[in-house]
Amino acid sequence: MWGDYMDFKQIEAFVNVAKYKSFSKAADAIYLSQPTISAHIASLEQELGITLFDRNGKDIRLTHGGSLFLEYAINLINIRNTAITNLADYNNKIAGKLTIASSTAPCRFILPKLVTVFKSLYDDVTFDIKEQSTKDVVDMIIGGESEIGIVGEILKDSRLKYLKISDDNLVLVSNKKNLPEELELEDIFNECFILREKGSATRRTFEDALEAQGFPPSKLKIFAEVSSLEAVLQFVKNGTGVSVVSELACEDYIKSGLIRKHIVKGLNISREIFAVIHTKRTLSPASKAFYKNITGTDN
Image (cartoon, rainbow, N blue to C red):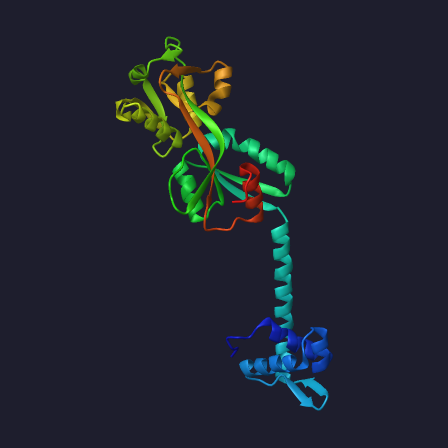
């Protein structure tokens, strides 16, 4: 049975003695002293429990057991060398599939630009983009399903690190012709709201802003909760109600006249967009390059 301390130095010594049929020539080939080679072979024979070489003066021949072990020894050396070569390529080559989890607004209106810039630099990288709620993005980072997340809110956890990469404003939108362009904060509580689900960073940011102004979110008339930004915009476009959404997300709708943007006096909601990573995991080369590209830092 193999001992606990067999190492590659012993195996290399054995392979070279078998190759050169000489302890002194093997020592010269791998730049060790002959006593060191002899010690490696002796230790290996003790650990394997077999005699590897028959020694008759300067005549060195493999035993039957030594011949059997030689094939395994050569395979072990080859596997080690292949592993070292492949890992060197892995460390130096920016390639492969990169999974990024992102909350809705950044995923649709910030991430495409970031990916396009990165793709122009590293053409061998492909992407698997996961659009999730902020909470689900964080869960994916913690669970190891994604190395990098893009979110519009910090959910505090000692295992996570956040770095700001952009800004975003939240705006009130509607498709109501009789709704003034400027509203008092109190007036919005007369409107029916279409809001994202409770795990949404946009909704949480909006509700936190109301509370900061002394208005409990429970006063809102919530007509519908939906799980996608597109659904929110479609409801608003059809006049079902009003909503608060990312200005980036509704920019095209506003420009095309499908919905209207309103100013709510005393309610200026601006949020930051963050890249999030796990503090205790080493990023793959592709993830590390992407993270540095969007944050300007390695860590």
